[in-house]
Length: 465
Image 1: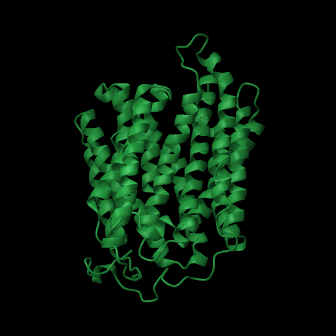
Image 2: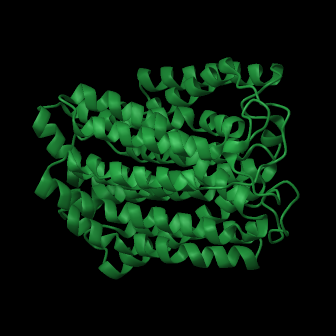
Image 3: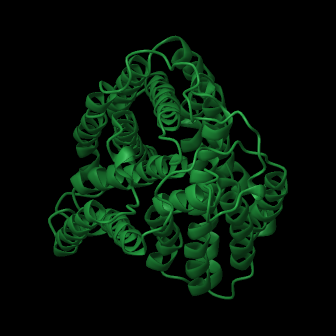
């Protein structure tokens, strides 16, 4: 929740930060990109560290580091410091995100994961919705630095609560050593991929920077896969890589977040660039999306307990596709009712997909690898938006092209949104691979019956996650 809140309030603070430091547009963009690169590159590795040293420890270190980096940004004397500290903030953000999912795995049996996952999803939705409003109030009355100061007391409170967390200890696994070569290769693959995708809105798809970046991703990925197959201590253990529910859930999240966030990128352009709405009016127009995300999460949790992950994932994906396609009606001819329904359907579908895929990922996590599967899930949800925005922006004509501009670009929005709906529809394939029956009673090894404090576990000998 603190990560979602931080990301949304930053968007409101960036214009003020730019004026304060007389920064360029590229420097302001890097205040977001630096964080995203660090998070995406390190999530799986952070989850692996949690499996080795304990997820409560990772959560504790992550929130304290997040607070320290936030305070540093609030005191930063220049934009260069902000960029560097945002990257550091991303490192600590990567530590804490897989830990939250792993702790759910260790605390709840498989058949009871739907409710806590739904609560987690709803809380993230509330934070994302509250961020622009809270950020606007803070920036207007206290300045942009206040949006980073607010992280400090929240993070310290979480750290204090973490000290009292008692987590069941899972069985020992045979791969406790962190392979540094594999970790470096994986971090490089993910960082270059996200950096390349993030640059497509500026460079386009058919340009040298994009093709060189994608070629680098492919090359390093081949090296990573080869290394993983040879090493005795892979970052992503074979038992995780061969888990169909885990990998299918990650693919679902990658594709649906790509479709949804690409659609939201396009919707923002249409609402503000074509309809001429200000940010507040645009946010109000999209309010049904947030409302249905929050309200849909507990409904999705209940549906998951009654129906199978396959059925709920397919249903949620269909809603995402319909909502994304419905946004193609967004424009001068579109009515409040039509676009409101499209946003609502998109929000309900996305909540269903996230709750189902997350519960499946954590419920099917092989014993001892809760952090790795949590890291895979979070990685998919970080790479997906970059992919969707790259697809959306890459299909739009350049503003400098003849006849382009607001009037010239708007006609391309409809076909682009249909392509994004097609991207989300690809998630139907992995959704069909999820379990066809409701979650069974607690699997052996998902949560051990004895309730040990993580601090009593000797890290080199036993995994706490």
